[in-house]
Image 1 (cartoon, rainbow, N blue to C red):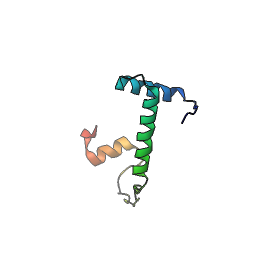
Image 2: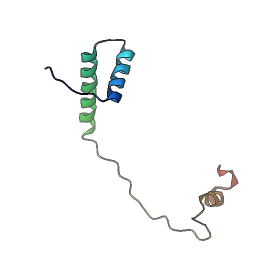
Image 3: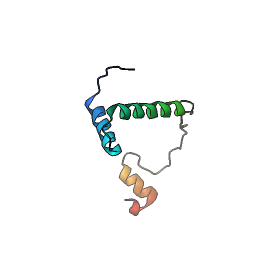
Image 4: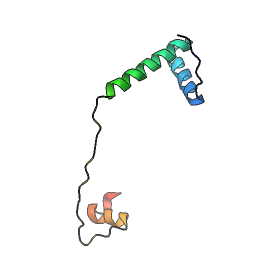
Length: 82
C-alpha cells in the first residue's frame, strides 16, 4: 500500500540513525520494520497489569526536624550520609 505521511524532524533523524546502524539505504524497509516492532511491543504489553504503589503512614518520630532535610539525614544516617 502506498501512502504519504509527514514525519517530525526528530523521527526522521531517528530513522536515519537506524538506517546508518543497519548500513542500508532502504528507507521503506526500515520504516516498515520499525513500525512492526513498535506495534508488536505495544501488543505484548497491553495485557500487563499496571504497577501501583500503596502509600502507608510512617508516623512522625519525635525530636526530628522535618523542615531541614540535610539535618534530618544527618540525624537518621549519621554524618557520613553524603
